[in-house]
Length: 159
Image 1 (tube, rainbow, N blue to C red):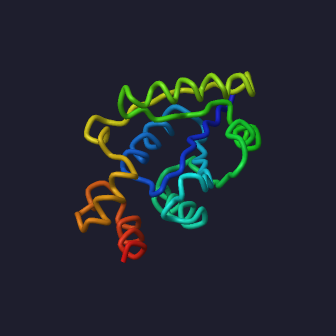
Image 2 (spheres, helix red, strand yellow):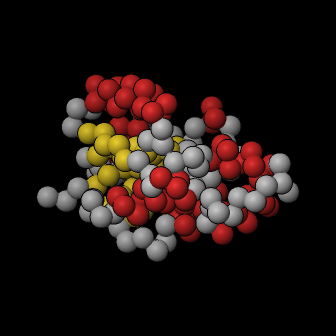
């Protein structure tokens, strides 16, 4: 049986923490779909199209990974993409409560889709897209947290 996992998020921008989870997920699943949520409520720095483009560039070397955007329910995106698993990353215990609640709601909306959690390697647990953007806004070096394409796009976006 072929198993597709959907790895959803805002990815504003995609970081080494995200790609670490993706690199390990492709060893577990036949296909991993990076689902980039439009999520206008978060007021992302990058547009949906820009985030899709950056994620596509960053994941171009990973076999069996595809990138899609979505603006509907996560379980609807998962069903549309043929995913049986929603893959979520947990950086810290503080992430767990929210993710646990979301997993329960998604299971209630579609009991055929399971949620699985992965943790990034220890050297990536502190990386968040929000922190990276703040460091960049204040003139800090973010090159150790992001792919070079993303560093360039962030520098251009921030100015």
